[in-house]
Every structure is written in C-alpha cells, then in structure tokens.
Length: 251
Ligand code: NDP
Ligand code: 8X3
Image 1 (cartoon, protein in one colour):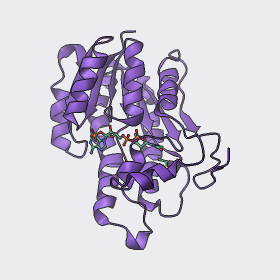
Image 2 (cartoon, rainbow, N blue to C red):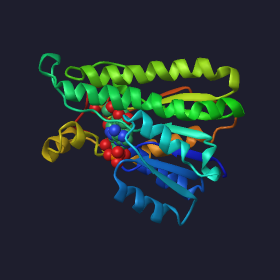
Image 3 (spheres, rainbow, N blue to C red):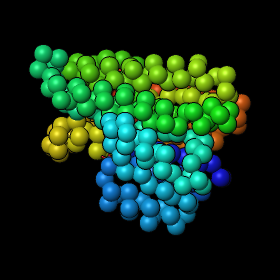
Image 4 (cartoon, rainbow, N blue to C red):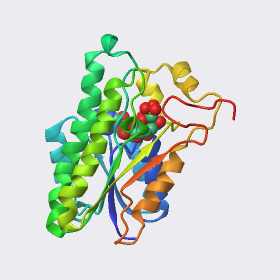
C-alpha cells in the first residue's frame, strides 16, 4: 500500500487509532496535532512499520496550517487521503449560559480549521485529478440535542461541507465522504468538560461505547474500496445508542 494519508488530530482518540491501524497496513502517513511529545512517540512507534512524518500546528492558525503542509518533504507532499478528524466539543451549556470562548473554539477548530487544512491540500488533488477526503462529522451533525447547540452547529456545518466538497470536486474524480460517529470513548469528554474526569467518565457509564479502533476500522474500509466505490455518508452508533439522547444504559 503506497498511498500517502494525512490525519489531523492524530495524537488521540479516533485519529490515533486510525494512524496505528494504517501503520500496520503500511500506509505512508503525515500525522498532525499540537502535542509534540505524542507526535514524537507516534513517529518512533509507527515508524517501525511505515514511513511517518509529523506536523505540529493548530488548525485555527491559518498561516501555520499552510506553512506546515507547504513544508512537507517531496515524498510526503502528494496527499492521496485526507482524514479531517481534528476537533472537539468545548462545554455543554444551554445557549443563554454558553461561554463565547467555547463557541469560538468549536467554530474555529471544527469548521474553519477543517476548511484551512482542506484548502492547503485540495489544489494538489485537483491538479492530479485524484484524492479522497474523509470528514469526521458526528451524530451531532445529523441531529441537535439539548445544550449541544454550537457543537451541533459546527458538526452540521461539517456535514454541509462534506456534501459541498463532494459536488465541487466531482469533476476531478476526487472522492469525498463523511463518517458520523455517536458516542466513542476517547479524550473527547475530558476536553468537553475541561479536565473533569469524573464527569467525562459518567458519559460512558452503563453501556459499551464505541472504541476509537471501531471507527479506525471503518475509515480503513472506506479508504480501501475500489476506485469506483465512494462511501459518501455513514452514521455509526454503539448498539446501546438510538439517538443523541436515547441511550440504553442497562445492556
Ligand atoms: P480526542 O479529544 O481524543 O482527539 C481530538 C484530536 O483533535 C486530538 O488529536 C487533538 O490533538 C486534535 N485537536 C483538537 N484541537 C486541535 C487544534 N486546535 N489544532 C489541531 N489539532 C487539534 O477526541 P476524538 O478522537 O473523539 O475526536 C476526533 C473527532 O471525532 C472530532 O472531530 C470529534 O468531534 C469527532 N467525534 C467524536 C465523537 C466521540 O464521541 N468521541 C463522536 C463523534 C464525532 P492535539 O490536542 O494534540 O492538538
Ligand atoms: C460526539 C458525539 O453525542 O457527544 O460528537 O455529540 S456527541
């Protein structure tokens, strides 16, 4: 497998699990995040199985995004598969009590950051008439739940961008698809609740949530379909989950 894959948010959760699985499969990988020590560890560990290059940038910083992706060595510069995964929820508050800094973070990271990274990579895909973009949305991009307001808005925006990218890049034969998970046990809730681990753990109490490896396997399946098959949109929930708010905690 000689495809080059760029994964944002590779230092944790879904992105990290995907990087680990792709390393076993021998993909050439560009792994991105902000926590340098985790990027270094991935480079050492996964570098045993595949070619790895790491990039440290904040997706909110437009100049940093273009500088980092523009700095890729030649052998990593033709990105075949872009996994737009970096993102988080910040806070869970009714709209009247929401923190504006949390709103900025979610819009700037989940929406604008995804756009900056895409803009840095798409022109080369268009030029080569080849490429595959996978946007990690959420069930929060398909339905809205109480106190989810801005996070849900950001993921609805991701859903719209996935559809829009697929239309606009169709003339170039570039695949675009969205994967929309429900509850996955990662650092997601630790970030949402600002380091309150008890509160984060309680989100996954009483049922078996998805694991990051479950989503990694699905991303791998999507990436390895033949050229004429594009998985355009997937919603994946734990069996115990029926909607954003309906969870069977007795399974
Ligand atoms: P994690 O918190 O475990 O991972 C988030 C990743 O995003 C980290 O690698 C983090 O890296 C990166 N990231 C966050 N902010 C920035 C930033 N400003 N610049 C660059 N990288 C950033 O969460 P998940 O793995 O769960 O989340 C991955 C994606 O999946 C997100 O888009 C999330 O919305 C989505 N999702 C998650 C679900 C869940 O239940 N967990 C369900 C549905 C969707 P670093 O801090 O090193 O920068
Ligand atoms: C993460 C799933 O339900 O916490 O996107 O919004 S949820």
